[in-house]
Amino acid sequence: MELGDVLRDRRKAAGRTIASVAVDAGLSVPYIANLENGRGNPTLAALDRLATALGARLEVRIDDEEPAPPPSVAADLVAASDRAGKVLKSLGRSHATARRDLITTLDTLQSLLGHPPTSADLNRLLDLVQLSQPELG
Image (cartoon, rainbow, N blue to C red; front, side, top):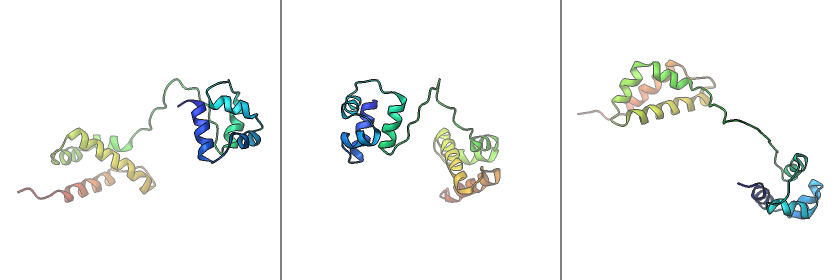
């Protein structure tokens, strides 16, 4: 999304006119109109004032690449568990998909637990998965 589109969308979502934003930001109406229309080269100071006037925060980053995702404690636990492999195979669905879902569920539990999941947490989750499966014939 282009800068002008972001500025216009934020301004309209706030129910503001260009004139009211210009007053709050200490910038001219034509300057902001030009930015919204994809013209002009704003300074970081002007963008910061616009962001503040729009109730937003300016964030500037120069990155070579996306930050690496944090390591998954759950992925390590599942990989180290022989039982997890056996339970996943018994589900009758794609092993890779079931493994991914198990890891995602265990990682999600971390916010509820308030700490990284442990092997005991994995085993409790595997118990639940096994108990929820219909008895086979």
